[in-house]
Image (cartoon, rainbow, N blue to C red; front, side, top):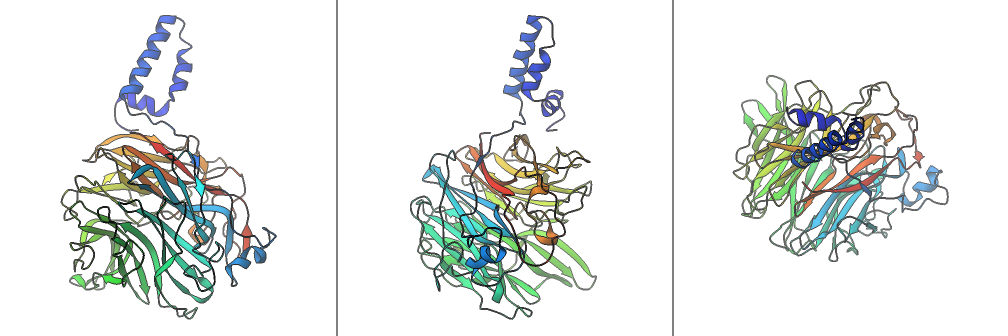
Length: 535
């Protein structure tokens, strides 16, 4: 329910078409017409939970199958090395979307193509549109061997993950991905550019990678990358991610000063010194940079604090800032909010959802500079919920988090945030509000909450006309169903545009826990879809 009014309560549980049908029971024509007119007036003046009609972006696998899509050895021959885990061929997940500032009808979406149960995918997909999202065209970028990378090229890797796209102010698109050789424990960060709206792409280049390592004593791993093109300077592009070392992690930032053609060194941001007596920030992940109107860079992430003396662990959303285009960063980070980690769980089968977890998402109003950050947390009912916070002073101070999903008795998860040209804040999230306990499916929906600049709720849009069954989704081992660590939300003028993951209606049994060994699932379990909403 969006608010306490009787009208909104009624509209929240009754579709307008059903309302008209129910009014047909009225015996007199005058009463019927009055009811219809009143209904139309209410629809015009109240926020309606209206279902959209998503259109598909992704399709079946474009990668080689070795002549037999059901033979694990044949399908994985393109990897160039022995693989482990279950390959979900034809299944896509973890989408992102970006809008071209020089042409809002031009957008690029990215995703995991053919996801593995134990990490990454056969490649990372891409598609572009020039008609505002009505039609999409797939394009292949050779970030991996299966996607066509040549030997000794920057894409000469077994798998790829964490796709991210950002447009520069001149319309240049930048695509970043994590690339990995699981068989020899080597991975790194790679990027490619497009000058024509996503139709053609440069050969990928490596920003940073670690050498092959001992499979047991691995000490280095690059993870959870994002990329941001400076919205005012086409020469500046920023990449940030986490480097895992044995026993410690570090945030890294690399800069390009020639529009993504070449990259400078990846430098650590911040320190791991005590923040107060006995407390140490020993983990930071989920880094994402936004650029304020005055050029300040804000790098948001979550961190874990360890109080060694009292043996207490705390979780916080936080940020670092740079005031010189990423050359230097603040020595100490700024706390946004404490939070309690929470994830969604299948309420009947107990299978977890690998969702956003602790990862934040951040957006900036490009005119006012107001910042908005969203994340998951445990709510008042002990369930996973979504919240959003606001900063009016460039990230120095933050408001208390405001719940995005207004019913704390329903699990809500995987939030992402964007701000349109009017300053309206949109937060996309998944939830189980339409699930009926005891039936076969885990009915899942995607919603877009609309909030004003001060985070006052202005209504909600249902983005899935019909619920989908999350139990049909691919599984990432013990971590459960996988719609993605994130999904995509951007704005085109006043509209919100979204790319998100839905499961297909296959009515297959849930295979959990997964058996060990190499296997292939060729079912088209899930797809990436697009929708556009005008507030």
